[in-house]
Length: 111
Image (cartoon, rainbow, N blue to C red; front, top):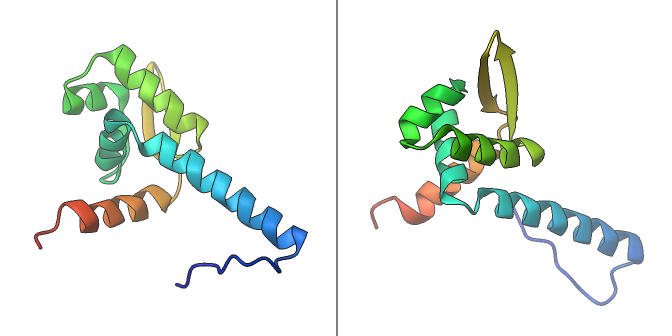
């Protein structure tokens, strides 16, 4: 996939569209820039998890996990589901999975 070519002859609509996409991408990157949120997404790649499961997997307090899940939910990256008193989370779409694959390729694969 080729990156867009920014040039002085872009019309206003094209430039506005690119700025909108840049804002969306920036918000996405801010949402995943926290280690706790990134680890939550890593765990959710394997499937839906309850808040309690995430607490155990992350060895973190419920308040901290809930705060990070709230931010991920606000950014539209995760979707909650309530079953009685238990709340489960899953990835909202495939964007986080694709991003995690890219991060893995960049930082985790052997050279």
